[in-house]
Each structure stands twice: as structure tokens, then as C-alpha cells.
Length: 206
Length: 206
Image (tube, rainbow over all chains, first blue to last red; front, side):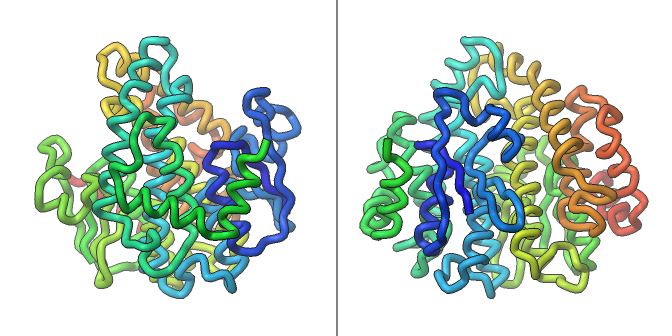
């Protein structure tokens, strides 16, 4: 498999899942600073000009929650999702969907406001609101959705790498993660996992 | 099961899946105009103050793509998803994730800009850009992702009610759906399905 990512993006969540699954893959780093995601070569892989993208033997897959579930299903021995329990699986998917459609979107208004507005004043207004929206999201995660010690409770899952990825953005968003003690301890716990650590080091390597 | 929705929301996608699955459920309409989604009673069901929400015998589920997959898994005889093919399932999930995290978000900047900015000028700027962003999203769907006659190809799936739900927003977004002939024909094809039609009528009934 070929995996495409850019440092600091949500692709880290998938990279962690690939390492935790023991998948054999080749990682390709895109330089967003040089707009490599908009090159003809990459648009042929993902017309959305985004990462992550995973080239599998069956075809190309995109979108973080879809890739996470695919990895959990393709490597069942790694036990990365409650595959035999539709309700627990839906609870897991709901967590990942909240991260992608609400929390990631709140964060993106800091650096990617041009997706949704044109005027410099609007972009500044959006950026200014990010600490408030990200704080509200993480209050909900801390109080309602994080079970502990892992997101889903006793069992590590594909939610955990995704939560680490997004909670790692809080510093950039001017939010102090220690305000959310469970989420903050989770990040430290994650980085003690050897495979997650390897994924992290590959992701952030220059 | 108890299902919570508001008219015109993405909950329609789940309502269509419930009807197409032959599920036995009670539908409760929330009046967003009266902020019923923020009532203490509803916050106890969904602390995110959003629809859809589904109260099942196992517990409460939220987030449209998670609910759609749950319904497909809970009613396998309805054949609403390629449950035995992880790659095709991931392709289906990727489509639904694109709708929730990119297309729905683009649309929401028209009426829900206060989620991401404070100044009236910013909200007007966001609203002004919606036709452009929704057009870009639907060009991609029309050209890259819609297989036909249904989203995934020959087989009807949980993607179809979701696409109808979102393509139905285009008029509100000042985008002419007939610019996307495949998507426009899909909407007409959907409304010829008796169960989808019943879901639609329940959803939009006063």
C-alpha cells in the first residue's frame, strides 16, 4: 500500500492505525508549502487535493474515518475496532465523525478560512474564534465522550490515534490542553505505545 | 427506537435509511425555530444539541454516517451497504464522510456562520461564498464519485438518501441542481422509490 500524508495533518490518525495494525506500507510525504497536494500527479490520486490517501491493491481510498475503519477491518487481529458489535461500532464511528465534521472543521477556521470566506477581516474573525470553538469541543469530549483509559473505554481503538492527532492541534489553536485532564493524560499514554511512537516519528520527520 | 429530526436537516438521510430498512421507529420532530434542540430534555439525549439522534435499545447514537452504517448493519436483509466487502464499504464511507465533513460544512456557512465567526460582515462574506463552494463540491460528485444509477453503482445504498438530502439544499444555496445532470436525475429517481417517498413526506410534514 502507498500512503500519502503531510506533517501536522489529520493523516497522522491513519498513520498511527497503520503502525498499530502492523500494516506493510510505503509512506509518501507531501509538501503542502509547495502545494504538492494540487499537482496533477496527486490530483490523479485524490481529486479533492487532500490527505490522507491510501492506494490499496483494490483501489484508492480517502477520508480519515473511512480509512480508519478500513484498516481495522483489513487487520482484524490487531483488534482496533468492535467489529462484531454494531452498536459499539456506531458509537466509535460517531466519535470519529464528530472529530472530522465538527472538531477538525473548527480547527481549520484558524489556517484554512479561505475555504469559506474571502475578505481578510473575515479570516481574522474566524481565526479569532478558534480558541472558543475548540474549547467547547474538547469540553464535550472530556465530559461526555472520553471513557478512559482509551476513548472507547478499556479497549484501544482507531479513535485513539485520531484523538491524539486532533488534541495535538490545541497548542496551535491557543488552547491549553491541560484544561482537559483526561485528554491530556491520554496524549501522554498514547506516546508511550511503541507503535504509535513510531508512527509519530515517521509523521513529523523532516 | 425513537428518532429525532428537524425538517430540512441532514436527519432526512437517516429517516430514508430507516424507511428503506423497514425499521420500526417513532419519529419526533424538533422545532429548531423554538430552539428545542437546546432544551434540557434534548441535551440529555444529545449534548451536541444536533439532529439526528436515535435512541436504540442499547443506547443513544448520533452523527449521520454512523447512524447510516448502524441501520445497514442492524437490517442486513435490506442490503443497504456492501457489508461483506471492506474496500467497497470504505468507498461508501468515504462518500458519506465527504458529505458530512466537506459538503454539509460548506452549506452550513450560509445559515450557521455564527458557529465560526462573530461579525455580521464575516457572516455575509461566508454566505456569499456558499454558491461557489457548493458548486465545486457537486462538480466533484458529478464527475468523480457518482457511479449511477445509484451513488455506488448498480446497488442502492445508504449513500443515496444522504445525497438526496444534500442535493436538496442546493436550491437554498442559490445553485441550480440541473447543472449536475446525474445528481439531478438521481433526486428524481429517489422520489420514485415508495419508501424514500414515505420518509420524505414524514420529514417535511407540518
